[in-house]
Amino acid sequence: MPLPDLPNIDALNWVPPPETNHIEVVRRTMPLVIRADADNSSHWDNVWDIEKPGQNVSPRLNNWWGPGHTPPGRQFVLRQYWKLVPGTFLHVMPGTRVQKTWQYTHGISTTDSQSITAQVGISADGISAGLSATLSHSVTINDQQTETTEYLVDPPATGTRVWALWDLTYEFIIAYTGTCNPIPAGTYRGDVDFHDDDHYSGAYLNYNWTYKVVSAGILCPQDRVFNN
Image 1 (cartoon, rainbow, N blue to C red):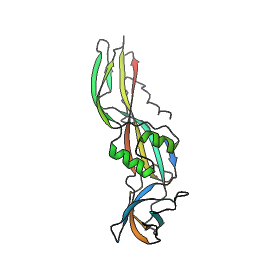
Image 2 (image 1 turned 135 degrees about the horizontal axis):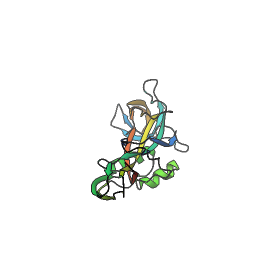
Image 3 (image 1 turned 120 degrees about the vertical axis):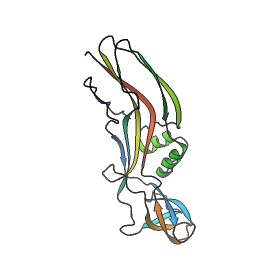
Image 4 (image 1 turned 90 degrees about the vertical axis):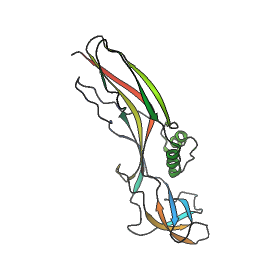
């Protein structure tokens, strides 16, 4: 998957944006898993919100109810962008070599990993491999971890070195069709067959999430020297 472009450091008084442009790498209309809670019993389960070929088994969503109870047209969208690592925008002059450490959290928590993969309908074992295979794009996310990262910024021979550090970030969205705006997670309504016995139960239907942001843990330094 090509990485987004970094911004252009075009002047000594340049100030980095908090984030670069969000670049769309996947947009797909695909079945997603939605949680179904029966409104007249204690039954609940996960069902596909769009019937998958060969998946006409229980539990299953038989139909959405009428207007006002049906989710809007939606698509799965994956975007990526660079986010400025806090405290890493520097101006370095001759003779002022900078050595700095940052405590940095990146990767994906177990909860978010399970939530994303469950809703897309893949195994939570190895989120990167599962998403890459499902989306036909390389997605690299490790387990969440906090580490201390050290960077050395050498001074220029003359002038001023403008330096910044960027963090590759993924944005997962269940968006209104044709947009990048997240749809409401619920509550929707429909008939669900919980036991494969043709006994339909009215159910509340909710997506577990419609928007998540995850650091990929890929850092990229950027610099330019200006003779002032």
